[in-house]
Length: 188
Image 1 (cartoon, rainbow, N blue to C red):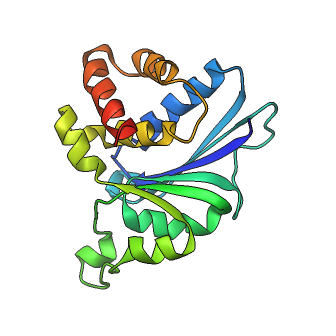
Image 2: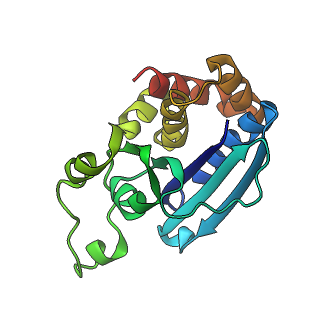
């Protein structure tokens, strides 16, 4: 199984925990895994991108344009920003949440309308309101794990192995909440 996954979002959304969880899961499967993090002004709500590549042997963590099997996006504008990295038969899993970037906040630009409709005309989009599901699980901060639950549907790895990775990656006091968030994303 060779897979290239991009996790894209805005600083502070938990994309690094998501990539750590995914990396651990894939290593537990005996795969060679490379993870690379690229930070924009992540501390200030800027773009954060993580590349996760796995397979028999992986030589580089970087994913080129047209090379991602899956893009997991924490915010719909980020999905649009990175779509050119998706393979023709790939899928974008995206949270439907809108987080205004600085140019929109300052009034220098407007948030584009109908992003998901336009994306759906070009590529396969699996969109869900991960924020509502995370809140239902017990914390709005669990959006990352809701999205990992959705991503699990595109992997041939058992549900129990994902749960095991959560139990060994997440701080003990947050394990039950994250298991619930994962389940909600998985069963969405």
